[in-house]
Image (tube, rainbow, N blue to C red; front, top):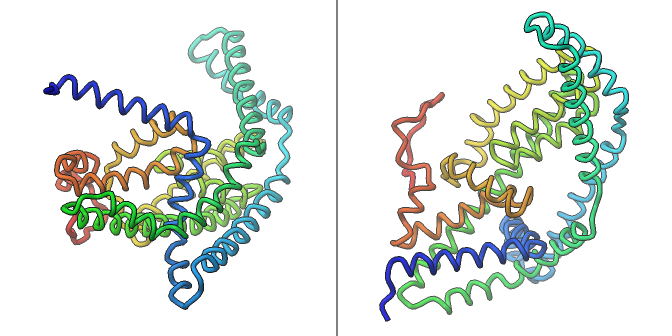
Length: 364
């Protein structure tokens, strides 16, 4: 039976729909599994180094996991204690906003001859919506659900077994691959390991540096709870493009709602995050993370939007390494190479604006 082009397209759409349905329905299991896969790549070099010293694989993995859990647990505990000291009186916030909105209301009624009652209604509604969103957001941030506990608890288990069975998994993949594709498959596995490990390791170091820069900068500017806001801004930087904006927007709005005369401090915050963003884009990321991912911004933004629809914040955190993995696979398969080219950053080199001239390397 000959399959027509239309039938083949319909079949592809059905298979894609089934895969997406499975990804959405099984997200409570798949999210910690995918995070554990990339976390395994992150700590793999250290585990491998300890194994080279003659330590048993299981013991090596447990040693590294224990150190990482203690380190992350200690940082999380310190961050939670600092965050618990943040007290926001939302009635006081509303009073501050009312006093600030009064001058805006007068300006609108005087210059544009807008009815005062209309302006007052919409301003009151806006502040109530913002405060309600802020309250619910803070509540959701510090409320741990049963699902979240399960996902966090299962992460070390997934990570342990992924690292323990890594050789067996590689052999399984090679066994189910045809003989003429074994070399390509081995190349893909090695490149994924190299690229993802470099990217995640570099990104973690950049986030740590940004946490220090943000916290010190906000402290110098005179923002209360500088450490909490600085670390939170650095963590949000894990989400490309959007995270940078959110990271600066949170302390900006915090000062706006809690400081009687916020304009000078808000201006300082804007200048601070512009400087830090410049340092991150031109010094930290190029020299620490490098250009290992090589995906164009449009593909990243679209992926972030789709990942947010499917898995929420967790999807936005893992979508970039997932996209990088897919690009590596597509680049090694002849029929998929055009798609790898489409999402890559190649083909527009002559149109780019460059602050510093660098030597062009082989950009595959």
